[in-house]
Length: 353
Image (tube, rainbow, N blue to C red; front, side, top):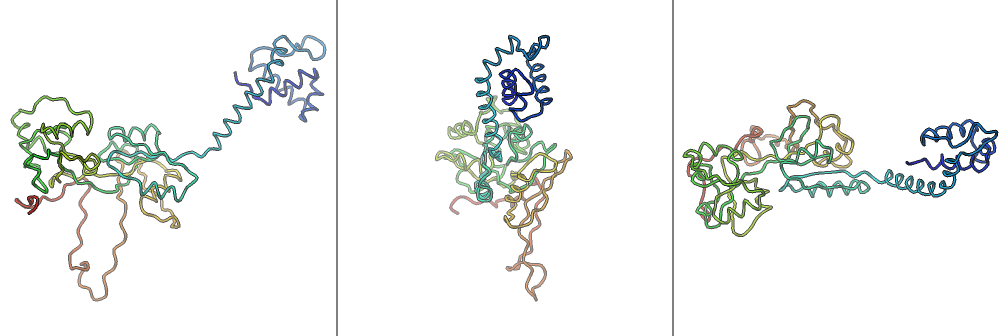
């Protein structure tokens, strides 16, 4: 049982003096306060320390035992108090998680420059745990790859990634610079078919029911081992394929698949000052700029905001229309989650042409 060291010192003073008044005077506290502390200590221990049926102030057997043990107990209690105070004074780290393929160095470096006294904890997280570590309060913010279950989360969309197909180096597809989904129809998809949008509609193995009943690879490394062996193909975000690049496989962009979206997420509600500061860093706000509130939807829809780009320059006086410097009309941003418009048939090029 942990006993407050101050209470132990007060008890020791009474037990030594055998007089509450003299003990209170030596401690510089009121006698009533000292008496109350002793009564509370007896209640905590569950037995009396002083025999109140005897005249004067007399210790019980339990009181004498506690008096003998008090010096050692006080030293141990002081050590616990010092450790607790040291831990309380230690700065609480800011915790960040990120999924494979996402590079966050520029943001963590900026944080360390602005807040050198607040340590960072950076946690690489598998894609299927990207949200759970946030909901379990294991991290403050998380870099995730959409789509995710956004219930109770707020998010800022950062950038989009091109999907690529990874094939063996000697696969005929490797001579192309870019492909379409239909050109992959005759291949075996190593990963689960649901992971590639539209695969069930074009793949021969799905349409003819000839897909082999093979176990799914446990990791990206395992999947690439199968690709290199000529077993099949795998479709990955470009950054993940680049992270696991190897000499016996090649990656080619798939033009008509939706791009993967990377977002910064945190728990919905009013974000803490630290989260606000990190959001500002990710958005590109300077340390001297005023801080704008982050979008933090509380509904289950979890609206996603994309990091704003710099405001476009106004055209010079006399410029015609709203065209840019080269006369090209400004592009309208693609809606969230949609694929790029496929090029006309034959729009891909063979490598080297």
